[in-house]
Image (cartoon, rainbow, N blue to C red):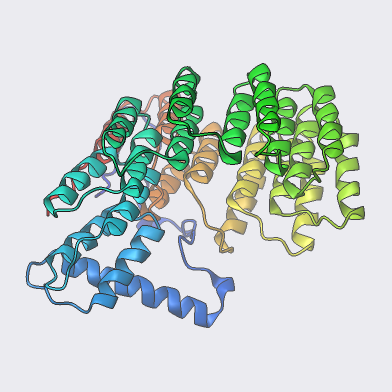
Amino acid sequence: MELHLLRSTVSTPTLYPDRTHKPNPPIRCLSSSKRSSGPKELSRILRTEAAVKNIERKANSNKYNNLWPKAVLEALDEAVANNLWETALKIFGLLRKQHWYEPRCQTYAKLFMMLGKCKQPEQAGLLFELMLTDGLKPTVDVYTALVSVYGKSGLFDKAFSTVDDMKSISDCKPDVYTYSILINCCTKFSRYDLIEQVLAEMSYLGIGCNTVIYNTLIDGYGKAEMFELMEDSLTDMIESGSCLPDVFTFNSFLGAYGKSGQIDKMEKWYDEFQLMGIKPDLKTFNVLIKSYGTARMYEKMGSVMEFMEKRYFTPTVVTYNIVIEVFGKAGNIVKMEEYFRKMKHQGMKPSSITYCSLVSAYSKAGNINKVDSILRQVENSDVILDTAFFNCIISAYGRAGDINKMGELFLTMEEKKCVPDHITFATMIQACNALGMTAAVEDLKNRMITTNDSSGTRLIGF
């Protein structure tokens, strides 16, 4: 999309500066290459990317109908594995044109699962119609994948309708995996009103809950602070006789009570699970550190880290990110920087989340020079940046009133295929409004509408 220079109606800086006259180069963020992978691995990645692009180019032509099967199928697998749904559907269209093509339910199921992850229910509906025209009879796996697509998109009427379709076919009944996906989607969208309906249907069909379903319920109820239902689910799990609590159950309980600030209950359940013979893992300690940190119980947070060292649990990037975020939000810049240095001294590479926490803390402290320093560090690293990082750093420069830098980062974000979301636009609109940049505000609003509309593009047309 071509970017036009915008100038406000008042005497204010340009939102999108002319980069040809910019003395300092923009931030250079790496999207997919990994310097640490080594020459051989990098060579393999580049060859794979080139092969996928080559096949994708051929997908736009009707003359390629007898390609080498291995090349097409590997390109499709690569696109699916990386959730490149538009590319995958183009390659699948090319696959269907080949003389040697044989329709397979497994291929469709794989595509449906990808479309579910990418929240593309319309594409899934079109793909299902295409599957029927290929003369295939949907399997349990296909229907379950379709339930996942609709459930992950919050389209529960369609998800339940798909389950009803399964029940009407003798050899395609929904199974425990189908219902576990449906329950998981209900918890993700806080549709707890639908869970009892699902459990009642399972009971009627003689399908019992497994460990995955019990853990999904416990985790969902815990995050919604529905503690009574969470504990009831644990009781049901134990009384079932076939499903025993595990470390996932353990961590869900600690996380639920810790996040809600009920530290006493968190510690009580820590002891209870220990008595059940369930040992903590690294995630358990991370949950405890975050809970104590959020509650400003820094001594206990430090005690957990000391305990980890004694038990030979090595802190990970996630552990340090939690500590850095805790001290950053508390405004304790000295402690935050201390753990950031310690993290790097131990040879751990900061992630996008690490830099987000640092930028946010420096921004709130009004130290824009430190934000500049972080930006320079990112330029010289191979960290894979995402939309959340750009939102954070755009907000920092917007708060400091540096509209030129904010606009430059917005351009870089688009160049690096980090799609702006509503937070990006809201942040920029707020900053431009504060400076009276009315023309820039209107342009951003139009871009926001265009970005939202482009997500619903109809691509399947083979």
